[in-house]
Amino acid sequence: MIRVHHLAQSRSHRILWLLEELGLDYAVEVYDRNPRTLLAPPALKKLHPLGKSPLVTLEDGTLLAESGAILESLVHLHPEPALAVEPGEDGWRDYLYWLHYAEGSLMPLLVMTLVFRRIPKGPMPFFIRPVAKAISKKVIQTYIQPQLDDHLMLLERWFSQNNWCAGNRFSAADIQLGYPIEALTSRSSGLEKAPSLLAYMERLRQRPAYQEAERKGGPISL
Image (tube, rainbow, N blue to C red; front, side, top):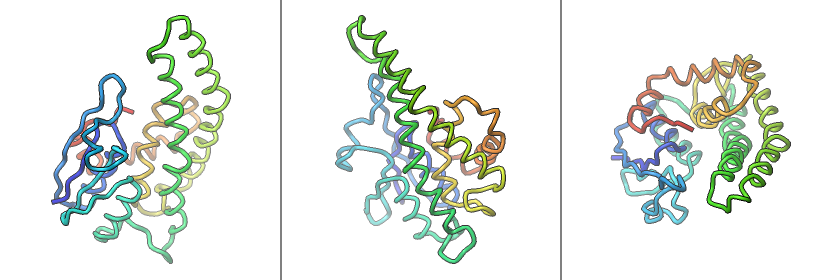
């Protein structure tokens, strides 16, 4: 049986979701974050040198890492239902773009936002904290948020004209994009200007496989 090494509130929600969409049997091994640092536990390093989640052990013992690579591997190992868009199909280039955009362009900015918001809350001398808070706020306001606004408008334009990443059908690219969209819609201002993006996120949340993944793996709570 496929085994998912699942870290709570992480990208591994994507893998549970994909496996539900594919209708595959799998087991979930849950790892809890360090309550102080919120980092993954050392136990994951016994499986992979980076100690990150998601990790998936296939039936033959092969270990897969990186959510994008795991998604691509599984949708090609299990081509029914068709969650990959193949070369020559309508929407193939869009599928590739959004599949890689999620981690390559959008997610780094969201991680930076999270890091800079946590810096003032970390351990430091009390007289340093106001300075750290001011610097973190300035970085978010002048560097990160303007870029997030650009991403918000890019996504709004796309989903005002398309229901899914690949245009006319749900695919693995939507699963890959769903996680950073959850973060973006929960942390960004100006969402009143992005009704199509919010409607897209609601379409994802209404999928039974998404809901079952959340039931088994816990809320995303980004």
